[in-house]
Image (cartoon, rainbow, N blue to C red; front, side, top):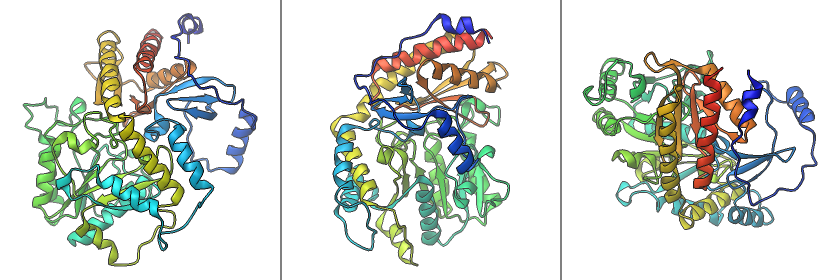
Length: 458
C-alpha cells in the first residue's frame, strides 16, 4: 500500500458541535484482552485494528482518543434519530429513575402508548393495529412465523434467497445467505425463492423485458416444493444484509398475490427499512403498493435500545392465545419509553423528510462517483438506505471483495464508518442516522471519492 498517496489528501470531516467528556475507562488493549478472554470468539469486529467506540452524539461517535467519526452505518442501522438524542435521553433518564422493570403480567402505561403510536403510523385501511413487543428482530420474526402457521394451519414458509431475518433457529432457517447459516441448524419447512436482484439476475435477463421472472418463481416454488398451501411469505422490502437490493417495483405485488392464492399470509420484515428510512414512505412496503398481513420491526424502532415488535391484524394476533407465550423483557418500561420517545422525535423533527432530501442528494453524489470510479458497479437504494456494489470489472461483475475491505479501512482512517454486505461482502452499506446533514453527505461522498481513487491505483 502506498502510504504517501494515502496521506496526500484528506477530506475534512465536519466538526461536531458536541464535545464528549474525556474517556477515563480501560485502554483499548485492556478492552481487547477482556473480550478475548471472557467473551465468545463468535463476536466479529470490523477493521484490522478494532475500533473502540466510547461516546456518541447524533450522527457522530468518538473513540477513546477523542477522535471523531461520522457514523455512516448507524450501529448497523439501529440509530434512527441520532446517538444520545437529547429528547430521547431525557425521557429514558426519567424512566430509569422511576421503574426499570416489570413484565406484561402487570400493567404499565408506556407499552400501550407505544402500541397506539405505532398503529397510527400504518395505513388506516391495513388493519395493522396490534403489537407484540420483543427484544429483537429475530424474536419478532419468530412471532410472525408462529402466528402465520397457527392462523393458516399450514407449515411451509417462503422466504427469499439473499435475505436475512435473524440468528435464532427459525430465523436462521429463513435466512438464505451462506455466511450467516450454521451447518447444524436445520431449515424446517422453509423454501427459498428468487429475489428481485436485477444487477445479478440469476436468469441473465434484463428488466423490464424479463417480465419479472424472479417474482413469478414464487408461484412455481409453491407448486413444485410445497403441498400447494403455505403459511406465509416473508421478505425485506429492500434486502439489507444482502447488499441493499432494491426489487423491481411490481415484484412484491406479484409475490403477495401468488402467496395469498395459496392460502398464505404476507410478512414485511421492516427491521432495516422502517421508520422513514427510505424517505419516500414511512414503511418500506408502501413503496411497492402492497399491504402485508404482518410487519416485523426492530433496530430503528428504539434508536439503539433492545426493542422489536410484530404488528398485525387483531384476528391474526389472537392466535397467540392458543397456548401460553411469554417474553420476560418484551415491553420493558425502559425500552418502550425509548421507543415512544424515538417515534415522537421522528414525527416532530420530520426525520422522514430529512431522509428523503439528504438521501436524494447523497444518491446523486454517489452516482456522479460511479461515472468516474471504475470500481463502482452499481449504486442503489432509497432515502438513507444506500448501497454501492464494488466490482473489479463492470462487464464480468467480478466482486471486488478485497478492495471493499481496503475502502472500509481507509474510510475509517479518515473518520467515516460504513458497513459492507452482500454474499461476497463487496457492497458498501451506507445507512447513517437519519439526522444526517447535507454537509455530512458531501463529506461522505468526497471521502469515498478519495478512497476509491487510492484503492483503484493499488
